[in-house]
Image 1 (tube, rainbow, N blue to C red):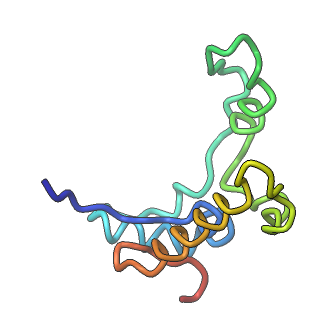
Image 2: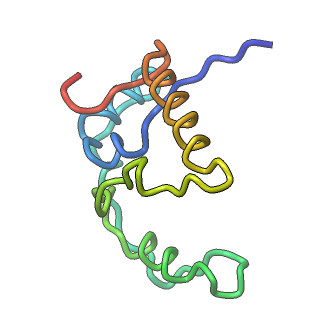
Length: 112
């Protein structure tokens, strides 16, 4: 069974939320409100069941006030080891990634 879907690059979403989110809402048939871009931190909330292994990440998320930019660029392909085919696997995944960005279901960020 075919199911409609959309594709969004999380990096694009974090870089251009004010551009990308209205496009996403429109594609999904939702009413856009800029108020979704900001929220009140929920620092006292407790999430996760990993015995504290993810607490730093959860606290960052729960303490946020909106969508934040990525911290640094992804590593280059050369940074991945060739051993055990890791680099070739990453190369193949990047090919899939580029193919997905060309699909009509993809919602671009930026001014595209």
